[in-house]
Length: 250
Image (cartoon, rainbow, N blue to C red):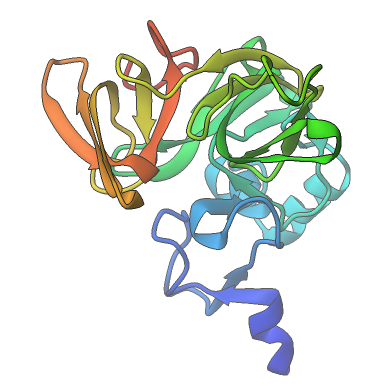
C-alpha cells in the first residue's frame, strides 16, 4: 500500500463513529470519493452493501455488485464503490425490489430506513443558499450539492421567488422536478440531523435568531409534548401538517 494508502483509504479508528465497521480488525477502510456529502456526514456505498445490508461478505464482492450497476442512488445507477451516500439519499436495489432512505436515527447516527417503492420516487432537499444568475433567474443550492434553477418572468418583480434558505423541496427522482415546498417556519415538522437530539422529530415552536445558523436556536415540541432545543443548523423541515417521509419512530 505504501505512501498512497492514506490517499486511497481511511484509517478505521478516526472514521465516523456511526460507520458499522470493526475498529481493530484492520487498519484501513474505504475513503468516500469527493462528492456532495462530507466524510463525517456520509457512508461510502461499499459499506452500505457489505456491512449494513449484508449483500456481500467481502469488499471484492461488494465492488462487483456495485460495478455491475445493480445499485441506484437517487434514481441513478452508481458504479463507484466509494460514492458518498448522505442525508436523505435514496438507495434502491432493483433486483430484490428494496429501497431505503439514509436518515438520522437516535443513538445510531445516519442509518438506512426501509421505504416503499412509491416513497423512493422522491427526495427532500434543504435549500442552503440561493443566488441570482444571468437573466435574473434564481439558482437554489441544495444540501446534497445539486442546484435547481427557478426561472422568473420579471427580474425586477420576481413573483416566483418564494423560496428561502432553510426551506425544503420535495423533488422527484431522478427527474428533479419540484413537487412540494416545505417552509422553515413555526408550526412545521422538522427532523434533527445532528447533535445530542439527532434523529428526534418535533414541531417548531420558536426560532431564536443569533449570529449565523450555529448561534441560532430552535425550540421544538416532540410528539409527546415535551419541549427541547437544538441548533438551527441541525433542523431539517419534513412537512407542514405531518411528516411526508416515513420514520422509524412514527
